[in-house]
Amino acid sequence: MKKFEEKTIHTDSIYKGKVISLQVDDVSLPDGNTSKRELIKHPGAVAIIPVTQEGKLVMVEQYRKALERSLVEIPAGKLEPGEGPEETAKRELEEETGYTTDKLEFVTSFSTSPGFADEIVHVYLATDLKKAESKLDGDDDEFVELLEVSLEEAEQMERDQRIWDAKTAYALLYVKLKGLMV
Amino acid sequence: MKKFEEKTIHTDSIYKGKVISLQVDDVSLPDGNTSKRELIKHPGAVAIIPVTQEGKLVMVEQYRKALERSLVEIPAGKLEPGEGPEETAKRELEEETGYTTDKLEFVTSFSTSPGFADEIVHVYLATDLKKAESKLDGDDDEFVELLEVSLEEAEQMERDQRIWDAKTAYALLYVKLKGLMV
Image (cartoon, rainbow over all chains, first blue to last red; front, top):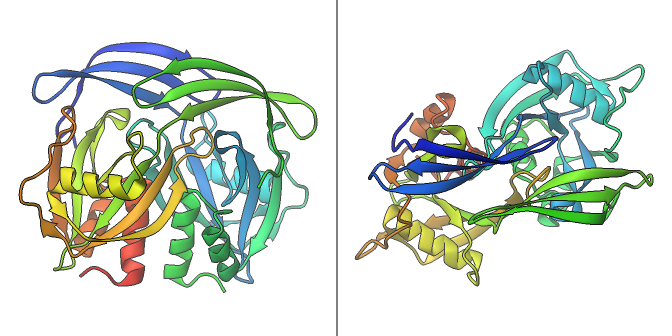
């Protein structure tokens, strides 16, 4: 999986932040010419498709500064150092929704923006949801509202672009194809 | 769609590149506290789901420096200034695959990484594909190999993670749900 490999000639580290870093690489192309690649480093994330016993999808609404608007999404969160994706998925599910589960199934993983970022999202299906005895606290700077919606409601939200991100669009096709929701 | 709005107090422009820009915003949160948001600006992109008369999916393999490996993806490309998404979709389809079509249907659009980037991908279904008389030239620094695969072959590539990005994962569920491929 190195077809058309672009070899790094030089890396210019531009910024190291709390969540992302930016570097610009000079690369040599397969034809011997050179080019520049602007690259974002990200720790990776998980996303959870939580389906209740009643066949409703548990979602969260939050403000997304990058888009200057709020979005309704499936719960998600960044991997913390030393934490495996399954552990992150259980923690984020509890922090964002107040649900716990022992039934977490790996669905898939994918790169979100392979053209400029190394972010990988690991997607899990969570069923057999139980209300946690006491809700874990999330990040101090996260304000999130919980929603439980039917497939029809979710699809309407998608047409209205209240749902408007790739992982949630993927999740809606997935639950529909698997017949997991009412 | 401004729930939990985060108001900008100050913007620090860190980098303006060929494809992406980076800024760090100081924001005031709904509870009056402040936080920082690291934000990537991107011009937006289109992705095309090209299905041949024989029900095969046309895909491209290319090196993705951000991931240091090659990926098999549906054709995609950035919006150019002044260019509408449908126009970009037709151009990228021809540049990357050598196919043209008069039958391009809007499928959906979504944000790829709402946590840190404003990139939106507009997804189109392309059918009634015809070989272009002369192939348009793409970008000088893009090396791309063409593949035409069945649904079964594509799903195997996904299990092998040769297909490993969100827009293509979405596309595979979409063609399966719609029964568009053999």
